[in-house]
Length: 84
Image (cartoon, rainbow, N blue to C red; front, side, top):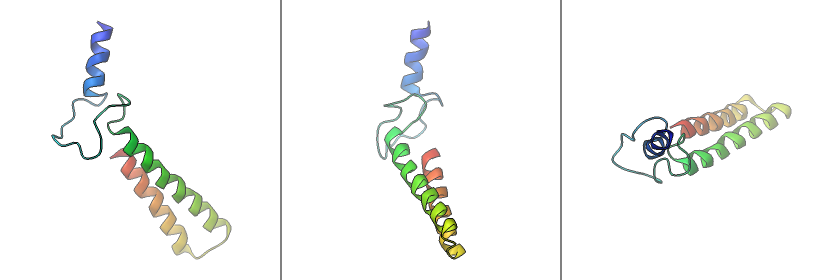
C-alpha cells in the first residue's frame, strides 16, 4: 500500500496534481515530489544569493540606500520566482 501511495505522490507531486496543461520550462515533479520545477527553482536561488550578497556589501560599504534597495529587490524577486 505504501508503494502505491509513493508512486501516486511522485506522479502528482506532494502538492497534488498539476493544474496547468502547459509545461513552460520543464516536466513537473521530475526530480522531487516536493518541487514542481526543480531546476527552475534552483536557478532562482542564485538571484536570492546574489541579492543578499550585494545587500550585505552595500550595507558594509555604507552606500546610498538606493543600492541596498535594489539588491533587496533582487533577492525578493528570486524568492518569489523560487516559490512560484
